[in-house]
Image (cartoon, rainbow over all chains, first blue to last red):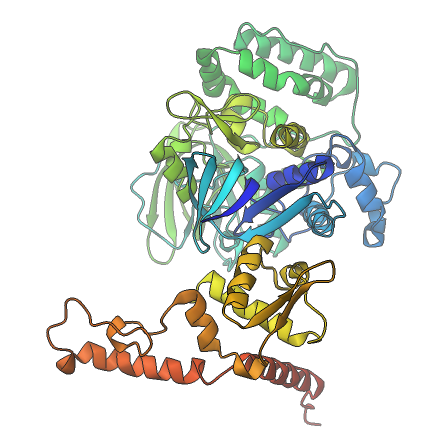
Length: 458
Length: 158
């Protein structure tokens, strides 16, 4: 007979930990919980495992608490740490601190749970990989790689972002030690040759992290960045700008919504020089707007508007933005709008051909390596995670209509391949991107974790 | 490879062996110190109790103690308890011998001959060494490390 838990949290990154913390906070009757984690330190996941203190959070301190019920939890944690006295300013809440610091916050939070006084909870951390989950008569059979299977009455999948599995537009590339498909692998920025350029595909937040890591180790050669639109993310204002704004955009046509947003952004920029207040005002409604849009409108958004939205939405701390801009201005970063066409490994270096939109012609460049910074794998069916592959194959989970993540209800209840809600199988976080659109950052995660804790305890 | 159960079992026994033999060791202390999921640990400790290696005491100050001295708990015994035979083929096992179904003549089997040697070598280590040896080795390794950090070779004077 398998060991049984009332609740099994699959994944011990930020989402899993914040769910665990919210469950600890609310549990008033006995409950056994297992959290299964592998690969990255418990609580930190891929996102907060960086050791580079120049990798900053893209969200202000005041919005990073793990608890909806205690908005200042993270702020107060920093204030309690003498080692971060540099940050102990009046405007700490407005600042963008290192992701590493947030990782330490999550680690501390985990330690406090392990030593918690909540006698109702019996908690086990299992360091292992979940290979498959199958429905049984009274819950789920959870197959682990290195331990015997366990039973879970309720299961929450907190599997997070999946690493990309291919270079955009290149399907026939043979394996090469100069091609880094997964930018989150530390090796992507290790053993850099100072004498040859580095080529990066994608110009979003992952590119920024990668460039920061390269420059941090004294890299002075060229960094060629090619992305579809050749634009880096915009900056957050130094301090938060707030102006009253209408709360809700009409949910009839995505282009109407977008043009209304644009006009509001223009007026906000006229008044405050920043577009941030409009995005802040619309953010609480993004999930609702998205869920109400018909599928063809969502597809139109992904095709025509997403890149412009991403540039506005995923803003950088101003100091990081200015740093990247200075590298562009000094020509260390060559930024192109275009498309990757071919990558050849010559043994000593790579020959990379890309289409340059500005000249409407192809260019060829030699580089020591290519790093894929297009972000998490966008096609759920392509992911290589064994658990997700096995569950997709058995039909216990299915992809959402846009193929961005799990098919689920807006509340995180998993919908199987027959279109039925699977009782007691849930998810929070990045896997709900197709359903909620806005579902990866801490401000959304903690709300989901709070609601999910109520659900699993109910 | 050792199963997680066998490894957790050995780590738990090692932890218990280090504690005061008169005070029962609580499951949660072992779980916390050795990072063993508690529910797994509970079944492992029960198996060790049923095998006569541990004894338990119920109640608030209850827990587990060794029933036999650490020097008598061989590693082989613990490994066999959780993972079964240490032999890699059934025909070379001394405790669980079975002929191989596909074997024509055991006496002339080169494979058996090699794996028999492997079995003897493994057995001679696992059945000779005990929980006590784990503790002795750990102390020796720690001593070696602390000596090597203390006694840094001086750089020759130029």
